[in-house]
Length: 223
Image 1 (tube, helix red, strand yellow):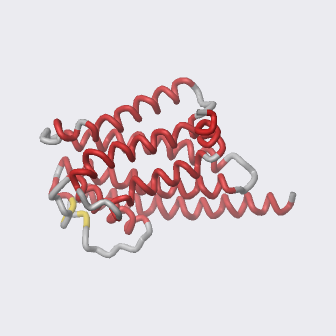
Image 2: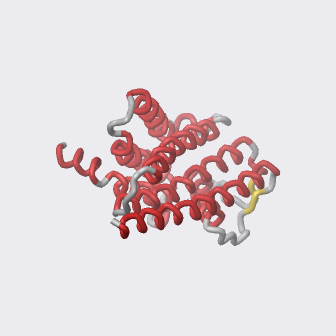
């Protein structure tokens, strides 16, 4: 237990980074959709929850309580999938909870990036975490739109919640990286505006992050 606590404290950003990458892109290795829905998804959310513990250490009681409540909901939703997936609003509420959960973590990451006047592995790892958290938030915002109005996003593979999720991971990744292949596209005005907003936010994050890193590197060099 002491080893786990030490790892979550000293390597919290590296652990969170690995958990986020697994959550977003583990579909590369998993082809069994039922296994993905009922086993991999809850495990991935559990890993992100454990990885995020280090981010909230030494935070106020209310922040830890809010994080814990969001984490419990984020893990319970995929576990309840076999029984509640038939409900029309299930995936919309699941996506809303995930958006809030990842936004809370992103807020803590940004606070960390702005404060220290030095650059080290934690800063680099936290920067990467922020980028993948933007993709996570974009994915689940698009899921909110899709499950409230399936016609809002065109050409998604809607055979299964897992295929919808993986298509949206792909779509959000190519949008935020400005690759934009165009094979999946927003149709409704709400979807178009949200995608546009995330493109702008991602570029702003990249520009500000570069400025922060250069500033920290310059401060470190002067010292």
